[in-house]
Length: 68
Image 1 (spheres, rainbow, N blue to C red):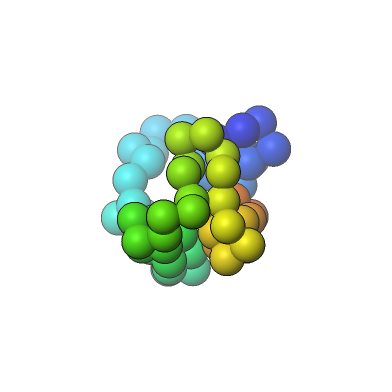
Image 2 (cartoon, rainbow, N blue to C red):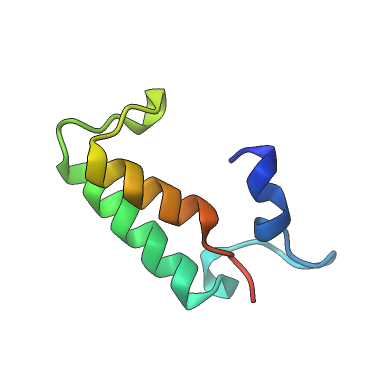
């Protein structure tokens, strides 16, 4: 996660951050991204190397608010 995403992924003080309280949209974006990463031989998330579809899914995951 980078600083640009901190504002959309930070809950109010006193909350524990888990996928259980994340928005449905964020969970869908995460699941699509991770599923693609596990199946795509061209994508390697650790180094930031993605195919065209992986790049799109990563962008969607990064820009989908975790909380409403």
